[in-house]
Amino acid sequence: MKRTTLAVMMTFALAATSATVAANDWKDASKDAWIDGKAETTLLLNGNLNSFTIDTDVKNGVVTLTGNVENEVDKALAEELIENLDGVRSVDNKLMVDKSAKNKNHDKNYDRNGKDGNALTDAKITTVVKTRLLFESEVSGTSINVDTKDGTVTLNGHVDSSAEKDLAMAIAKKTKDVKNVVNNLKVNH
Image (tube, rainbow, N blue to C red; front, side):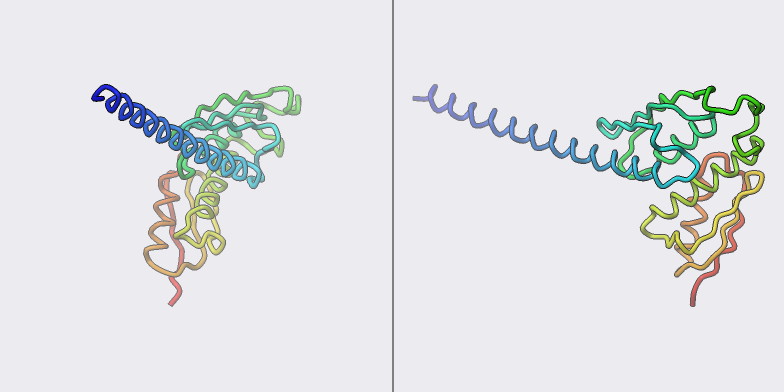
């Protein structure tokens, strides 16, 4: 009798553990799917990247980027846009720079519009800061204008509180390649 009771209890314990593991697997898979959708949307909404040549895959919060981009700046931009999305633990950037996609007459330090490396970096910074502001629920990103020149980000526009102004400044400051931030945001009264 004791053996039968013990066997039944062990069976229930194993079944409960299996159900918990299955529930956690489902929860992790749905979270990864949510992150993947957010990553794909972020790349799609970015006007500086061809999102149709970039694939994303997410496993346990790690986003793997594969595909082709035109230059190293696009590769870095894609990674930076994704790495600060909610739920992303890290980014494995396997994007390949496709030299054949570039115009053969362009020097390697210029992009397809004739911009030099600094202008490309400034454009990347502006894009990343603006995207982060738009995705931050505590900031009215649509009312903030972002400009970048030589690594200095200038924020212009109106916000609802000093806390929102400070958060926008912090978002800009923590963006890669930013040297300085000029915060011209005005608080609505």
